[in-house]
Length: 130
Image (cartoon, rainbow, N blue to C red; front, side, top):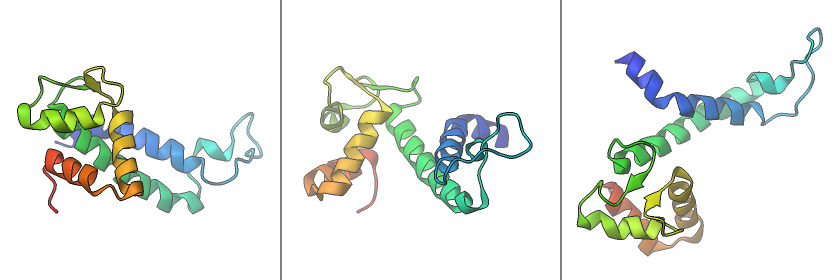
């Protein structure tokens, strides 16, 4: 259902819009009281907005997959024992909850450091193919 997709991924649309609108230099829009070019996506930012939307939607979808449909955090009761090891790798502050920031940071660190073991654990835990 289109409405459900819109509501589910709305945070991704907002974040992609705001981040893409910041790519080019912020300039005051003539003829307006306070508008600047960061209030909308300029032609030169459109491609970036599309890329951000794809990336943010993929990250949100991955988070939702391991979140188990919860309220924005993944806790130890959402999955079986096999996922607990992955959970502990990502749970950097050891508070028993995973935030989007912890997940994104772990994925970024794995991709930047070529940490093959961490990458393997992430792929296995998220059910991604090799």
